[in-house]
Length: 419
Image (cartoon, rainbow, N blue to C red; front, side, top):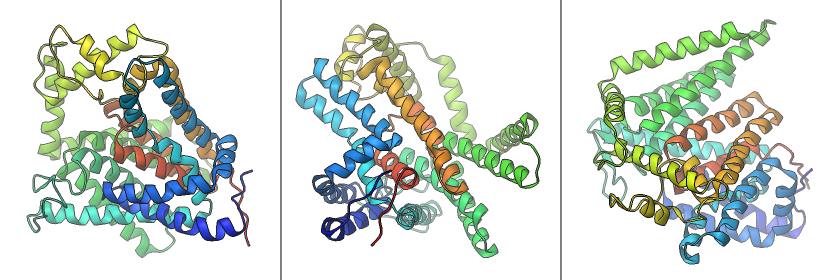
C-alpha cells in the first residue's frame, strides 16, 4: 500500500501543490499558459517527494504502466538518428505521463479527487456558456480569448477538436452525476447540463472526433446503467440486453444524423473523400491528407517493425518515405497508435495498449460505481481519440489524460495517513 509522506514536508509542501493540481482541472480546458505555470509549481513537488513518487510507480499498476511507456520513448532516443535536441523536444510532449504518480500523490484523498473533477466540470461549464453565447450571436470574444470562436464553430479556448473531445467527456460525467444524485433537482440540473453539452458537441462545434467519443460514452453509460438496474431487480444481464443497447444507440445516432444538417454534411464528406482517395496523389483536403498520413506511417512501421525509427524520427522518416512525391514534412500522423509505432515499433504499441488495459482492469478496484464507470469511460474516450489524433502528444489532450487518470485512479492502492 502507498502511504503519502507525513510531518513537516507534508504540512508545508503538499497543500500548495495539491491546490495547484486541483486548479489544473480548471486550467486544462482553458489556458495553456496557466497550465504551464501550475505544472512548474507542481514540478517542484517531484524534487521534494521523489521517494514517494517512486513508491507509487512501484506499487500502483496505472502509474507503472504510464512510466513504462514514457521509459520506452526515452530509450528510443538512444537508437534513433534524430538529433538529441529534436528528440528531447518530442519526448517533452509526453512528459504528462511522468506526472501521473505525482498527481496521484496529491489527489490521494477522495474529497480532493472530487474537487479536481468539479474543477474540470466548472471549466467546461464556462466553455459551454461562452460557446452558446457566441453561437447564438450574443457575444463576440476578443481574439486572445477565443481565437477559434465563430458563430458557425464556437470553439472558445482551444481548437474545435480539443473542445469537443473534452466536452464529450464532461457530458458523460454529468450523466453519471445525474444518475447518482439523490435529490430530484440535482438530477434535473445535471441532466440539463448534459443535454446542453451534447447539443453543443453534435450541432454547434465541428470536431468529428468528439462525435465518436460522445457516441462511445453514451453507449457505455446506457450499458452500465441498465446493467446496474438489472442487478438491482435480481435479473441477469445477457446478450439480449446488450443487443438492445446497441440497437438503441444505433437508432439514436441515425436520428441525430438525419436531423443535423451539419453532422450529415461532415459525415458524408468523410465518406466521399475516403472513396475518392488514392495513396500519395496530392491530397488537398484534411481527410485525404490524414489517409496519406496513415498510409505512409504504416509503410514506415513495416520497414521498422520492432523498435521503430526512434523518438522524434517521424519527420525525417516520413520525408524519406514520400521523397518521390515531395510531400510536406509531417510532425505527427494524427493517430497516436501510429505515432507510437513509428517511433518505438511494436514494443511501444504493446506498452500503449498495456496502459489502456491496466486502466480498464484497475477500474474495477474503485470504491464507487461512479468512479468505476467514469474510469472505464476515460479509457474508451482515449482509445477513440488516439485513433484520430495524437492524443498523448497534444498538450491539451495529453495533460487532461494524466490529470483525469489521477483524479479517477488515485484511490485504488492508496492508503492515507491522517493526523
